[in-house]
Image 1 (spheres, rainbow, N blue to C red):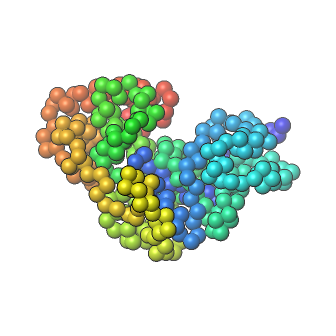
Image 2 (cartoon, one colour; image 1 turned 135 degrees about the vertical axis):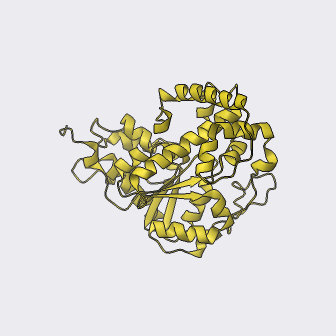
Length: 331
């Protein structure tokens, strides 16, 4: 076995993965994925959520982070990979035939390269919302990769998540979910957004970019042009035609499953959230809403609700601290 070398030595310097689209769930990351994927030079894979996890847990890797044949077997037997990236075993094994140790970063860069070529494009990336919590790990693996953080008004995010039949796993595990779902949702949203912005400040404007869902929906061509400038590719009108030839007319489908074009007004917390829910959300995460430029909906939050939010925050933080990274200001 080769001597242990710091992980950073094995970071990939290649062009792919070129971009990671991240953000709190239900913030519009799928919409942006489809928009960017429609660009003639960009191919975006849908949610390789296990990248950081497998690397940190050394699944299919040596303790130094080098790829073993086990990783090829794991990937070939992993439907959530093969459905999205239908690369064959021979091509995967070919990424290990150089005769030299191959890092996880370099190996997966080869996978992204293969995917780009399979789509007749040159650049490839990934869209995984939860990677907003893992930007630092992904940056260490791919120092040249860019990150696009999709941000949406947390009250609309909460409205969307609350309407799911089954809340996401992290919410179900929270000790405060059963007692107060709305305050928990506010803290869950703030947790994701703060972690992404915190990591983004460390990366700097050359590698990190924020795009607000509301601006994208209201001014799609303008926002996409700015995004392309950040990505270093020319704007192409095909980005706004991502839905053409894909729309499904079933009235029971939501906008995402129906592949509808960019549509405004899909969620509207002002009309759909009860006043007491707005108050609870803003008592918990109003500071971040204000920082992001979102107007408040509750002019006068009662001291009782403020105290309640502080207690729930303490419980939520204690429940998350043992397993997950927290924003610096939460410690």
